[in-house]
Structure formats: structure tokens, C-alpha cells
Length: 324
Image (cartoon, rainbow, N blue to C red):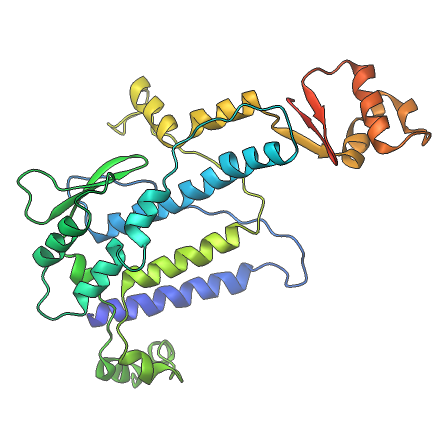
């Protein structure tokens, strides 16, 4: 790894920590609001390791979207015995397995190639062709010697492997790190504190791909503790010009991102749900007499719904599911 990359990486981590410590939430707070903003799906004329990592991130977030909007939603309908017709959706778990599975996924095979001095991008590509020749999401472009194509949820992307091995290596020469630590600039030397585990890590292979995968897993674990809301950014045209709306292009983005299925599940299901006490607190003003305490919450909610003439709802064990 070049010195510039080492310093840049350390400086980037320092800057992120500095920002987080400056604007971090109150440690005593029980609630937080976070915004996750990442690069969108990328497919260029030349796609290297950077695009591979970015598109893996988008695949992981798409799986998170699928899990919350389709799987968990419909599982809850089934659990609560709500009258419901199952809606099919495109699951991208097989793509994640193709990339992340250990052993045998693309990242694992890339790490394996990086550990052998004689490995080249061509031998790495041949290993991919051999391993995934029957995988429906993986293909070898015609006449290609080292390119490979993944059928992502948003479309096919062909990757060029020429720099995959070099970009995946995360080895820092001990002498380089010691020299930077001895810098007369206190800021630079402070970026390289002595670590207790440093000596053991130097002898252990480290890769950008595996580290990136672990960071993604930590991110998803954090997201799974929250109540997510999704914002989909749609590109109106491929020319990147104003006042041009390409119908087919926009529709394809909505379909690939699962937006059309999400709309269908909202129309066919019950997107609004409130516990009985919350429902009465919000809408009891429409019929104050149901709040006189003479009945339990379930009866009060049912009476309120009947009095206002609301259609399209189901009363279950602990909540009201409604269409509005």
C-alpha cells in the first residue's frame, strides 16, 4: 500500500470519528434519528473493485428493504390470521450468497487469490468461471478472458478484474508505519498510535473486501434495531439533463428497486396499524362517547369504527389494521 493511501485512510477515519464525536447523540437518550446516504447502483463502461463494493452495498440494502417491506410484513399478516393473498417479490439472497458466502463466494475466492504470490487477475477470473459456471446470477461475457458479469437486482454489470487483486490487498509495511509514527508533525504521528494487537495483525492477511463486508454487516445490524423509512432516488433520464423524462427508464428503476411490489402490498394489505390505546387517543375525538370507560379498548375501538363508518379494516389481538 502506498504511503499516500495509508495517510489518507488514517486521516479519513480520524475525520469520521471527529465528526461523530462532535454531533453524536446524547448517550442518555433512548431514541435517535439517523440518515444513511450512499452511492446508488453503479454500472459504467469500466467497472472495477470500487463498483463491485458499491453494488454489494446496494444489494445488502435492497435485501433489508425486502426483509421489512415484504417478508416481515406478510409474515405478520399470516401470524395475525389476517385475510390476505401472498404477493410475490424478487429476492436477491442468491446474489448475496454469490458474493459473500464463505467459503466459496467471490470475496472469499478473491482473498484466497491475494494470499498466493503467483496469482494473477487471469487465474482469479478462471477460478470464478470454474466455480460459478452453473450459477444463474453469474456469467462470462463472450470473448472475455478475465471479465465477469453479475445479474444484480438492478441489472447486469460486467466487471473488469485487472486491478481486483491489487485493490483488495490491505497490507501495511511495518517500517512504513514506524516511519510515519516518528514524524515530526504531531498530527501525522498521532494518526499512528501503537496498538497492542499490531504485531499479530501484521503477520495476518487483511483484505479490503473482507473488512468492507464486516462493516456492512455492522451497519445492517444497526439498521435492524431501527424503524426504517425508505427514500428512493429515481434518475429521470440517462442523459443527466433537465426537463427530460424517460418513461421506460423510470419504470425499470421502480421495478428493479421493488417499488411497484411495495405499492401493490400497500394497496392489497393494511399499511396503517395502531395499538388500541393509540387508536383511541388519536381518533376518540370523532366519537367522545366511546371514551366514557364503560367498555374495554377492543369494544371501544370497534364502536368508534362503526360510528364513523370506516371501511377496510381488521381488528386483531392487539391493534387495528386499516387501509388508511
